[in-house]
Amino acid sequence: MSEFFAMGGYAAFLWPAYAITLLAVVVNVIAARRAHAAAREEARRRLETDVDPEREVERER
Amino acid sequence: MNWAWFHKFGSPPHIYRIAGTLTPWFGWPAGALIVAAAYAGLVLAPPDYQQGDGFRIIYVHAPSAWLSVMIYGVMATAAAIGLIWRMKVAHAAAASCAGIGAWFTGVSLITGMLWGKPMWGTYWVWDPRLTAQLVLLFLYLGYMGLRSGIDDLGRADRASAVLAIVGVVNIPIIRYSVEWWNSIHQAPSVMKMDRPSMPMDMLAPLLMMLLGFTLYFAAVMLVRLRAEILRRERSASWVKEALQ
Image (cartoon, rainbow over all chains, first blue to last red; front, side, top):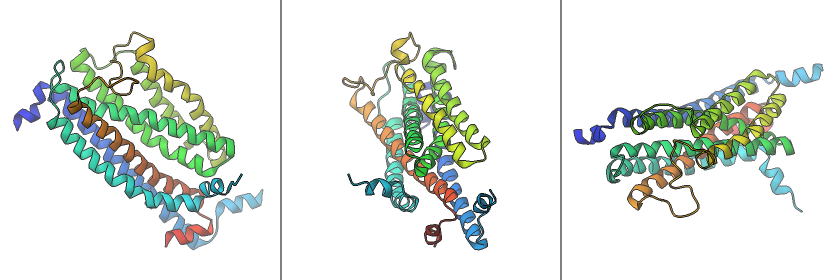
């Protein structure tokens, strides 16, 4: 087992490379899900107030 | 010619719904492929006759590098469609790509440095391939910076689309840098016209990882696209139904 983790002497390079890749894979999933949840929440709040400030701005022009 | 499919394809509610349906069909196979490929690459594949176990960095480095370039292609294509046909959904798709692309460009650079140190004796050289890849990172960051710097969404879409399209010039430079110039970086061993120069037990985990990463990108990008569509269409009546 320890032989596996030693990776023939390349452990100090190989494992950080795998770790940073795993980090990127996980972070991007979490970030995307959060962005979607936030967008849903924002849309819901906007529908409740029933006023669209962007439309208001257009009318003022 | 019947253009109904085209309008349907560009309609936000349709895309929002389709994206939601497709996400798990990409996401779960991606997860399974990545886990299996990591096991096969780290445990089953034999050590390289020159690089020993160090070569196993290829299983994270090459798929990240592939994503960094492939995502840019998707982003620039979507941006061009958005610019030419004034399709909002296409701009939303382009915007959904940038963050993911920047991440995996960074990963390809870092894993490349970690591979370069034991094999080349240095983390970094101003080599054509490495430099072009760094330029790709700056293109992604510039694209994102430009978008966040313009308040008006329509202007941000158009300006960032132009940047994305101009940046396409860098893609063939990355691809052919190892052939045009005397690069320290090795030539492609899989993505080439004739047979890949790798034995099957080394190649199979790499192909699985490449496919897994590609499906992974599709899943993550679709979730981001849904967020991007909602942000743009929040006043539309379909959003009310979609949120229920």
